[in-house]
Image (cartoon, rainbow, N blue to C red; front, top):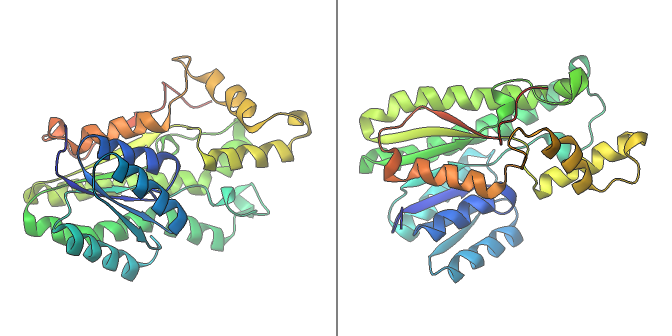
Amino acid sequence: MEIEGKIAIVTGGGAGIGEAIAIRLAEEGADVAIMEISKPRTDSVAEKIKKLGRRALGLVADATDPEQLRQAAQNVIDAFGRIDILVNNVGGEIRFYNEHAGDRFVEISGQEWNEMIDFNLKSAIRACQAVTPHMIKQNSGKIVNIASIAGRHPVGHGARGSAITMSYGVCKAGIIQFSDLLALELAVHNINVNCVCPGEVWTPMYEKNALRAIASDPQLKGMTPREYFEKMVVSGMPLGREATAADVGEAVLFFVSEKSRNITGQSLNVDAGARPR
């Protein structure tokens, strides 16, 4: 087992990529605290981890609230005695959750920018602020921030697609830079900080995106969300196959294992070779 007996926190661990990460860490011997705003999702993943023979702790908390994050970290310390791994997976395109009127830069409101920054950038910063004091005290730790290939180059289907993902991409670029700078500061405390940048991955969140896209384009009428994903995403993968949530979990496992003990401040794409288009 790669990380036998380690204690991990996975924020946004109740579904999609976060769930895949939490399960993979448990499979390799970690006890996992799943932090999620939804108690049913948290409880569901916790039960799956317990069935693997590992301990699990469900943490219902809002990743944009510093006090809730601080309390969640303390709850893990109280339950398990330490925190070895933090995976910041909370994030996503706000448009997947709420309808917003504009798709161009001039139509993106200040409120939307604030929401995106809180959800995608500040959530990771605040979680690190809550957890790193405990890692510094024990002089060890592994932090993996989940960003996106959208933080490394414009993504989307044409100019309109790039505009739609602008606020998201800016936040994910911030995550990459934050990870690099934090790695430099925490290296003296034997704490590794790295970043994983998934491409477009089929998840419940992406399914919402596909439904929205199909509804807004008459040419896509009658297409299922999965058919949309196959046509718009998988068909453009150079490797000829999709990157999956499980693939992201493998990348995270590498970064939190001893195999990466001398790797810090790095960002790894998990995207089946996808490039801007």
